[in-house]
Image 1 (tube, rainbow, N blue to C red):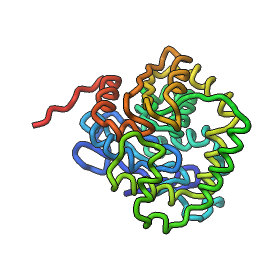
Image 2 (cartoon, rainbow, N blue to C red; image 1 turned 90 degrees about the vertical axis):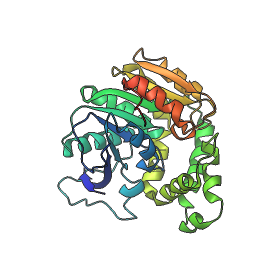
Image 3 (cartoon, rainbow, N blue to C red; image 1 turned 30 degrees about the vertical axis):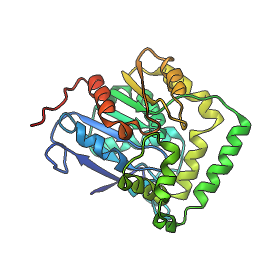
Length: 294
């Protein structure tokens, strides 16, 4: 699948279409944004399920998945290279540049977790470019200095200690995913999650920890949610302990443009834990019918 240089960094992207073609067919475009430590791989099944109505664009964010540098520095001598930043707004600008490079205008968005925070910035920076947006597992939270400091220490350790041999340990994928799930996923999906986490660039993985969970984020994100003008669906998992549903409900209450849905018996990956229910909510919000199967 292709790579494209965006703001001085190679970005992996792919199209998922109803025909299986690797280029868009002319349908409306639905862009998927993954969360921290992951890649677009976990959006593939959702994209295939919606490809009857959309040309689905999946990409790996700078420093993650197949857009990871593998320890290599970006081409800072390139005319398109820009200063490295792990602020959420910078990742929103990456998306704008990617759409420009692919000559894509107006889109719909479906973003998850940290990717949903990035999407929120994008919605306010470029409201004319988005028809509708789905934010999956997103919310606002309060600043707690001691809790944040403990999180930074733990997160720093997790990012530093990522030897590749962890991928080969029996059961490591299930152990890695346990905190994120209420319902178990298939072994293949869990192993893909672990693989993506181990591939992530050190600087990007650590840098986005500090920007996603920060005093500034607690101050700015409520303002960003309050500014939303694009029709938005916020889906939360009832059992999510990463971004509890109450945080999503609080965020949604800040704007009359946001519709809130809490999915029962799911945690941080409702689109994978209860796919039929998730897709029914998304299809209803996007105004598309369930495809007829033979």
